[in-house]
Image (cartoon, rainbow, N blue to C red; front, side, top):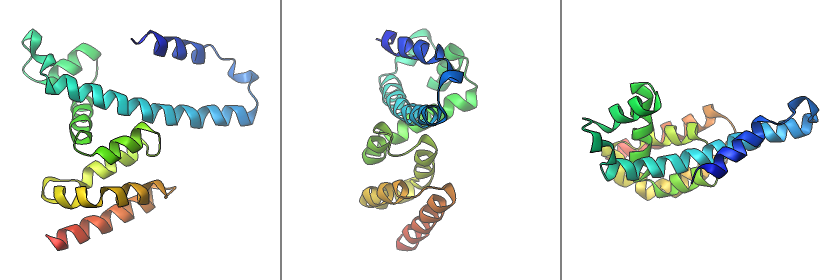
Length: 159
């Protein structure tokens, strides 16, 4: 299942980067970042299913984060972050789709996850499309944070 991905990574690793023109090198950098976002969406979906089915517990592990950290070499904090993103994206279909198609980066998705706290869950679901579009239209983190902070304040006022 992962052999094609491994082959693609091996091919990219073998590239003669010094032989690439500046525009091609730039396109490669941007393209890789987009693909990393798309792969993060795939990872989130797989991790959410692995977590939801309790596959992590088949060796007696006490938590999904402990098993993920142990079997992959991730820090516990990073394993918790991976699981948090996976669990939250499972409830945010438009955000997940935007990550999947490369419209939003993982960093922007994490900002959206941060404002989608339990007390705002219904309002977030109502406004998810608008928030995804607004974030996708911005080209800097400061603007995105400003939009999300304003939305969160308005949502809290509504509550």
